Image (tube, rainbow, N blue to C red; front, side):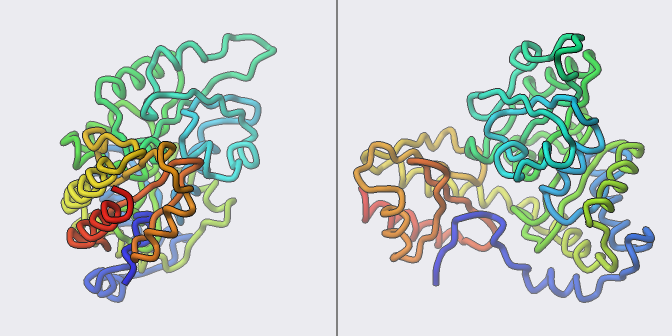
Length: 342
């Protein structure tokens, strides 16, 4: 049976999660009458110490609605060059919000206030007003990196002093909290809004949430409707999220430990570049520019040994640990890497 390390989105609902879904009390969420969705939204808002939350279909929809609800056409958003909002959302910021994204290349995906401050537009009719800063924690393309808390706090404090709002793509913020020991509430305190995902490390089949103040969530709810995201008896999905929050958060530490098994295997491969000490959570990205085999050849060779992984651009490969790959799977995958290439 194949061991699938392409993404943590590949998890299947556990039997206990399926049972929770089957028992879910439901209503019509467009009428705001689904009790399971209410319970999920209240739970997540409380975890992050924010006034309200909104259940949406996907992380992309959450980020799209967040940008729409905090900008206007012709304004500018500052973000890191490798972030999901810029790289993987099909140009949604331009297509829907009419905003300009101003990107900054940053080591390990972490913006610093000095870099942001240097790019805030002056009050000039020739320039689009800067209104929003977007961060990503953990950062996917940088290898699941966690924002240092001091850097995070400094951005929030100084952005607000300049009347800028701060949004966080926190699809894997659960991983960041478990690995760093910083609470979700403390992570959320310096920023205005967050999108958080249930269908990656937590293993739910569908869904993300937006978190923020009540006024923002009201605006985002209208944008969700405009985007076609209004759901009816969505409590079946919310029940999966509630189960995941209760049962699957602490076990993320296992995924982080398993990622180290893979990272150490790749570190033994001549021509591959990775520092296991810099793998902080469940994403392992290895540079293979020094290897003779092509990216496709490496992926195919491991695939023949039931190890599935993903290319992340020229000469970069990604493996992600998750609920559906065991410690034994990771040991077997690591052995395959070493046998083939080391």
